[in-house]
Amino acid sequence: MPEYSEIWSKDKIASQPVGPLGIISMRGTEEIGAKVNNWLMHWAENNKYNVTSPTVDPALVSVPGYEKNDFLIPSECPRFGSGEAKGLIRGSIRGNDLFILSDVGAYNCTYKMYGKEVPMSPDDHFQDLKRIIGAAGGRAKRITVIMPFLYESRQHRRSSRESLDCAMGLQELVDMGVSNIITFDAHDPRVQNAIPLHGFDSVKPSYQILKALLRNIDNLKIDSDNMMIVSPDEGAIGRNIYYSEVLHIDLGMFYKRRDYTRIVDGRNPIVAHEYLGNTVEGKDVFVSDDIIASGESILDLAYELKKNKARRIFCAATFALFTNGIEKFNKAFEDGVITRIISTNLTYCAPEVKAAPWFIQADMSKYISYLIATLNHDRSISALLNPYDRIKNLVDEYRKMQIEKHIF
Image (cartoon, rainbow, N blue to C red; front, side, top):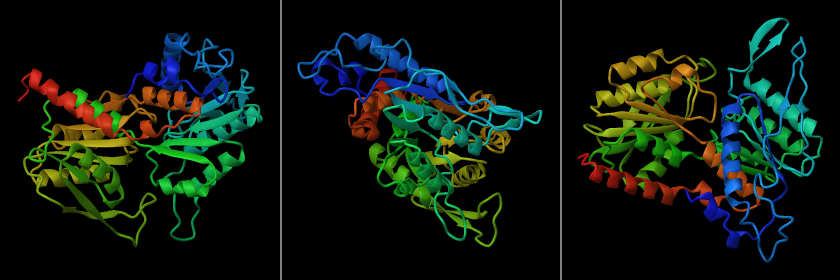
């Protein structure tokens, strides 16, 4: 990742920002919103005297935070006793390039309804997001929604008489005036076809996840003789092919046989996992998926890999939800079945998960800050979306570290 000063150096500035930058951090995103704000303010402080350009009026140029002491715009969605709510923005947003951070998976947030404490569901968070957009009242110059865990992304296609919730949600947002939607690792990015005339980017945290893994495990041999990538199913094959190609190691996959005559907890239950690929015997295995929900599928896969004599198993997921708790993961770790699980801070993570000895969290706040800063100046984010070169440099530095420390 290039340094911010390289991106915003004096001789590279050739565009004015879309508008003064503003960030609204919805309930559940307070921690990552504060980190994003700190990064942007730090960069602005260090670069505010390097914004002159012969083609741009210095009085009109603004980098994030250049004319502000803070980007974050206070807002809230207070509730009435009946559970109804309203959106309030407690700061000026007129003419702003407004970025709204929303985590629909933040079930730790609650509200009172008829005297009872009620946890917020994804539907509640999505309604609050729409309330804040409504409160903006068209005063912002542009609105971008950053929703890492895309609302209803697992209900992205129709196979019978069923609703297309994700597509309808996206259409609601653009109908309310949202220009761009940024999400991370959408379950199926083709859902953007629901809003073909508006901006939609599905960002993959491949670099940050690998960086977190390599910072915590120093004795990986990243070659085909000692390590292997395994896709948990055919749906995740694309992201695992990417890891296989950038790391130059072999790829295998599991095929999930499901019982399509039944639906349990909203899905067809898995009957068996069938492995396809070269032997994993004696090798470290890296498995990547977008979501760990209950975790049963990834645990079944890990036990199958251990039956096939895999050495260590590292599982990565953009969103680790652990909807059924972590007891089974604790047991799998104690039994030596899983070594580490790597995930991000893009959605709420319970304290007991963060404290688990097998869990590694990749901080995505700096990456989100880069995206916001780049988009604020209406520049291409293509270099940020493709981390191939950064991953190659990361692995080269990792191998150099191993040589210097005589790891092998």
